[in-house]
Picture 1 (cartoon, helix red, strand yellow):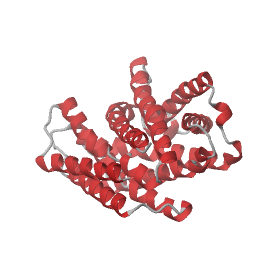
Picture 2: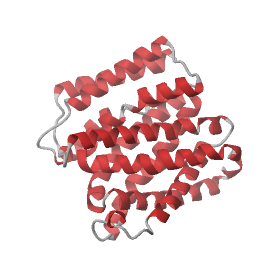
Picture 3: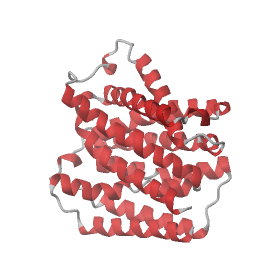
Length: 297
């Protein structure tokens, strides 16, 4: 029973690693707000149609509506705006490095709010995985890579990444009681996206320059914007919500934080730049730590 949610969390990591590489170019073209707005509207429509077709709406525990609201506003709207701006300024590798802090932050929040305490083997495996993630990303950069180019202050990049990490971790954790009450993870994803799409569309009515696209939206740019959103919001978020339901939140967060490692071979295939040996060692450590968690739980 443990293997399936563990694989779901790792699958979420792979989806986010793929999606964030695909998202960098359209995010730089449109700006953080317009990029997020298009993704939320398109992906909420797709997920709502899927939940309706599968008949999952009756599973929703509506008495947990405050959790859905908090997860939508903090986890999706604020968290994703901060993440996309971090991605635009710092690139996918740096963004994923900071987002890997989600594991210890979620573990701490789960201990305080839900009383979840991982065992010693889980902690050892999680620590090995986080060390591996750090090595993979700190030594994974390459000055020749356009994806690794940073714009603006690195302090701003770090602040945006930490804000995104905290908001997204809270957004996943706060809806765990609703899913334990029987709400299907796909229905939770659809509700979160639908609420976020409504909020960001209302904000977009304000005629401020910050809420206007940086350039005209062409059909090609629209498609390039929706694709990573479908991978991240639709597939990866649903997989991780399922993992959060079945596992301790901290362990699910660790397994869902392998994107910085998985992004290395993706960038290798995309740009033809071989990762540094230290980055490869880090990736192996991350996989070892993940194996310890899976095999001892």
